[in-house]
Amino acid sequence: MNRHVAIIGCGHVGADVAFSLVTQNLVDHLSLFDIKDAKAASEQLELEDMAAHIGSRVHIDHNDEQQLSCADIVIMAVGPSKTETSNRLRELAETSASVATWAPKLQAAGFDGVLINITNPCDVITMSLARRLALPEGRVFGTGTSLDSARMKRVVGKLLDVDPASVDGYVLGEHGESQFVAWSSVRVGGLSFSQWPQAETADCAQMEADIRRGGWDVLSGKGWTSFGIATAAAKLVDAVFSDAHRVYAVSAIDQRFGVHIGQPALIGRCGVIRTIPIPLTAAEAEKYAASATVIATAFQKIC
Image (tube, rainbow, N blue to C red; front, side):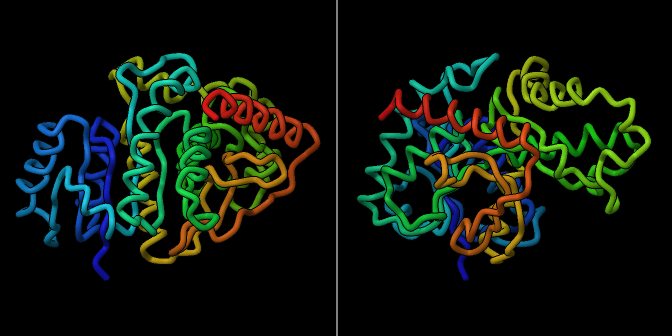
């Protein structure tokens, strides 16, 4: 199989996704798109410059819209001209307009693959793309709270002094201010988080704030965030190409609320195979519903 990925948007995030895919040997053909042709061309050239140091040959092109017709996966990574530092929803007017220009191009090209959205506000933009493209359900999904869940694992792992990879659990809801940690889902070594001695004195509210603020902490220091989300996107690409049937917290449709929202989902060759409705406490279910309302309200602004 010729694993063909198209990345729309070659800013910090799109470029790091491209780097991750090439260096991890997850792609055979990479098509780069950016409003600035020189930016896409320079990213192509630099990726080609490192070709001698990787274990496989990757064909790379840029701004060739004919390639959209044969791409297996499209990654939407269009960013705003200026990143909002307090609330991703404030980027909506600009990013929704930018993304809207690509949907007709994808349709005109006859794109029939899987689209993974990174563009913020992730859940709202994913909803917009899903409705505009009208692909089979599950083919369009967003990175959602996959990165936020990784941040939760880092914070919990630090508290318990365990490797974050040993932490299991999810951040649910909007990839934004209304997200929350489903503490009832968090397990380490087969034990629920609450069964660990450190949990008795843990400030869960502060931990949750640290998780929610993680992206802004990185942004304030280096001016952008890209490593974490690029790695999350690469993992999702791998899950699609390998038909992994692996569970990630992504932005997928929840028919109960009619929105795309961060939740555990089984990912395979056709995107989201099915979502996994994990049991929530009454308080967590209330937070989930509130987050869905935030997403739905924002979506109404671009309908």
